[in-house]
Each structure stands twice: as C-alpha cells, then as structure tokens.
Image 1 (tube, rainbow, N blue to C red):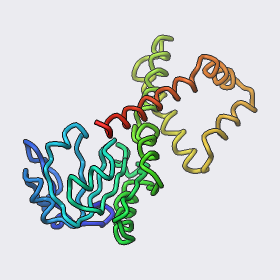
Image 2: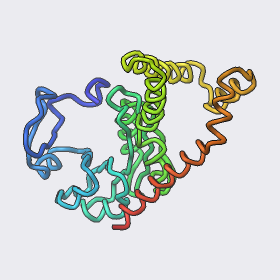
Image 3: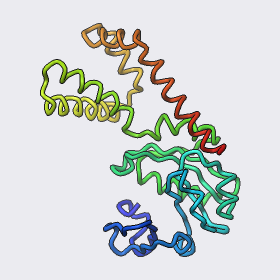
Image 4: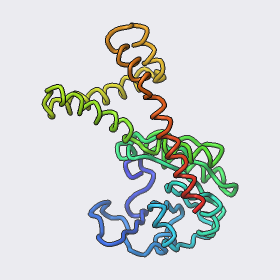
Amino acid sequence: MLLAGITVPETLSLSYRSKRPDRFQGANWTTDNQAVADRSDVIIVSVRPQDWPSVAVSTPGKLVISVMAGVPLATLCERHGTERVVRSLPNAAAEVRNSYTPWVASDGVNEGDRAAVRAIFGACGVQDEVTSESDIDYLTGLTGSGPVFPALLATAMMKHAISHGVSPEMARRAVNMVLVGAGRLIELHGDAPENVVETFLDYRGTTAAAIDTMRLAGFEQAVARGLMAVFEESLSIGSS
C-alpha cells in the first residue's frame, strides 16, 4: 500500500503483540488494537482465526477488511459493531505484488468502500469481488495457499532429481527456474494452464509421457482431494 501510494506512513497505524517490528518508519505503532481502530477509517483485521476471539475491537460504522480464513461476514459485523465489512483472502505473493485476492462485501458496504478495497488489493496483485462467501471458502485452498502447492510440486521434483545424482544446489536452481519460467510465460502470453498442457500433449514428445503417467497415477484426483480438504477446513472454522 505504501509503494502504491494508497497511504503514507503518517496515516498508517499498526499493532503488534510483543516486539515492535523495525519497519515502516513514521507509522504509528502500538500494542493497543482499539487505539489503531479509533484513529483509522479502514481497519484490516490480520490475525490467525484462532486468535481472533481475543481481539476485542469496536469499530462502529467503519470499514473493516478481514483477511482471516473462515470467519463469516455476519460474525465479523456483530463482533466489531459495523455493517461495513469485507472478507478477503490474499496470499503470500502480496509481498511481491503478485497475490490473487478474492473478496466479498456485506450489504452495508458502499461504492466508496469498494473502491478502497480494489485499490488496496490491486496494489498487492490482482483482485476480484466474488458473489458469495462460499466462493471465498473455496478459494481459501485454491488461491489462498499462494506458492505452497507449486512449492510442493517443486519439492517432489527436486527429491527425484537428487535421487538420480543431480546435486542439491543444481536441482534447486533447475526446479526454481522451471517454476519461475512457467509463471512468466503464462503471464506473458495469457494462456490458460490447460492450453499449455494440451500443447505438450499434442506434440507427443518426452513430456507427454510424463503427463500421461502422472494422470494415470492419480495426480488430478490428489489435487482435488487436497483442495476439498482446505474447503472443508475453512467451513469448520466458520462454524466453530
């Protein structure tokens, strides 16, 4: 947000629990969450869902943006005393301004609020307003994981390369560049992922054999089960 010019340090207030972070010179740091809310027009609630019940903050009439998984809009409205609430789920790639951030708004959110939300999450990458909280719960797994699923694939690839005698350093460089290169190519050409897969299948080279074997081994089913597990966990957080 600071890099995008959405705010400046002097109007940015942040809270911390134990040790004050050495970041954002000029910002207002405090251990008092209510003080942060009192001096802010837009409040971003960024804590683990299991820690949220201990965050007693009243924000009457203010815009509250939650980046917590699983906590429903109605619960957020009731707890924080406002009808202007947005649920969102950026991912870790926000740090490099490449997050995909879906969000959904309560009925009390106005067009000015929506513009603020688009600006905040647009500064972090790409944002989309979705139509239901169920979409957010599902996308918790699909996009909220950020780099984790590609990193899981990369880890398996690295282990296999090392088992075949490739040095760990070379395996790491090779796999990292595969991931980075794939992302940049898709970004450059705007291809849908399935088009990339089909291109290699149609060519029927060595990579096609790998794709066929992975699919027969249940690759797509394993991914689907993993995504469903995250979706169910997100729903369980909201109902607890």
